[in-house]
Each structure stands twice: as C-alpha cells, then as structure tokens.
Amino acid sequence: MIRELHVFKEGKPLFQDTIVPNNDLDSNAVMMLVSSSAKKLHEWKIDSMEIERFRYVYMNSHDTQFIITMDRQSSLSKAEEAMMNLVSKFMTAYEGILESDEWKSTDFSPFQPSFRSIVSKIPVKVCLAGHGGTGKTTLLELATLPSQGPPQEYVPTFFGDKAFLKADFDPYVFSMFDLGGQDRFVQEWGKIIRAGSVVVIVTDSTQENLDWTKRVAYPVLKAELPYARAVAIANKQDLPGALSPKEVGRRLDVPAYGMQANRRDFRDRWLELLKSVVFENVDFKIISEIEV
Image 1: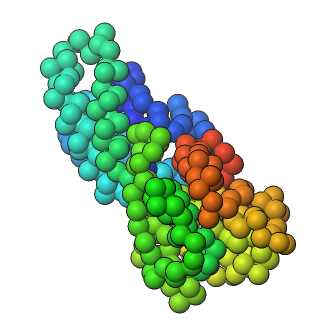
Image 2: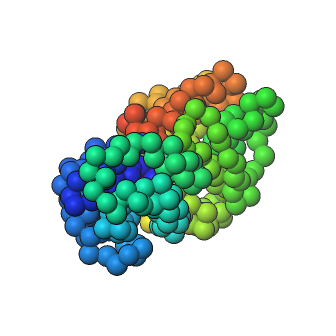
C-alpha cells in the first residue's frame, strides 16, 4: 500500500501528501537520503530502497524528484506503475512551471486528488489467516455482504476466497483474502499472500487453536510476510471457556480484539478495526517481531 508522496526540486519540497504517516523513522532524514539518490537518476528512471518495514520508490524528471513511501511488503511493480502514472499527470499539469522559475512560488497542493485517485486503484491486501472453523469466511461475509447476513454453518474454504471491500477507507480499497485453514492448504498460503500489507490472525479463543496457530501458521507467515502488520481476532467470545482477547493476545504475542463474527451487530466494530489497523490507529505487531 502507498502511504506518502513527496516531491522535491533543488532540495525544496514542492508537494507532500501523507495518508498514513511513517512514525517509525525520522522522515526528514530519510527524505534527504532518498531525494539525493533520486537526483542521480537519468530521466524517467525508477529505483527504490528499503529501510526497515518501508520501501521508497523514486524517480527524477525535469530535475524534480518524486518519492513514494510504501509498505515494504507491497507490490513493487504496482508502485512503479503508479509512479509512472502520477509523474505523467504531474508533468501534464506543471511541466511549463517546472521549466521556469515559477515553481518557486507555485502552490502544488491541487495535485492531491490526482495522487489519491492513483492510490485508490491499488487495493490494500488484507489476509485472514487461521485454522478451519475459526470464522474467517464468516468475517469476510460480515464485512462484504451485510445485506445477506453472515453464514450460520461452517463450509470449508478450499485454498482461498477473495473479495473487494469499499467502505469509509478513502482513498484505499481493500482486497480481502480468506485463506483456506485446513492443514494441507497452509503450505500453499505463500502463493496467495504475497504483497499482503495486513494479516488478521483469526482464532476461536481456545488454547488448542492458539497452539495450532503458533505451530503451523506462524512459520508460514514469518517466511512469506515478515514486514506485514498483524492483529489477532479472538472470535467466538460467546462460547463457554473462551479465552479473553487480552489472554489470546498475550499467548500469541499479537494484539487481539474480541469478536463474534456470526452477529451482524459486530459489523461496525469489525470494519472499524480493519480501518484502524490500515491507518495504524490501533496496536499491531510486525510479523517478524512476533516471539513464539
């Protein structure tokens, strides 16, 4: 997912739009480093660098440096395509200004809608991971098909289901993947979850299920999505003996949030959690930092 756009000329910032800020690093220092590398590129050449869980994709055009900040886990090819698109749009609007001294006094903020329209065309990939029967399919239905209501009986998901979700997430659209949770499918997750930004680990709030998650799911997630953000769902909180969300989170080493996926009145809570994880307004864990 694309988080920010910065545009520089002669070391001066021309335009900045931050959708989800990078609070882990000194953004000014990083931009100085990346923009200096961008200055050395030939016209329309794209390059990138990775720092911790972020990737910086950059281009130089008309002695103007363009830098996209994105999740390191996200698709580089889609970010490069977005870069070509946004630089083309920027040049269509401002090429003449950039070739004169007008750029020093020009307000480039009207470019924001164009940038965000490009961002909206690259879905944020959200993966629902967990054992069979924990409620992944029900959560997918709860988010995307509220008029039909969540299913009331379990039907195994073979390999993986996908759905697009548009709600109050502007400028993002979510591409949600329900990963088949049977043991024989878990080793195939890598074929589906590449470029995932967020993983929601779905549990049924039992110790047996938590043990399976750590033993079977975690090794695959750590290998395939080390820089993705993760939260856990402590589902089925209405069942006798269910571990509390706090206890589920403690045992999985991931912040956990309570849910009853088979109840429609939990839909708003579920959508708000998804939004808050993507915009980083709630606690989450980077998958490579999970201790098991």
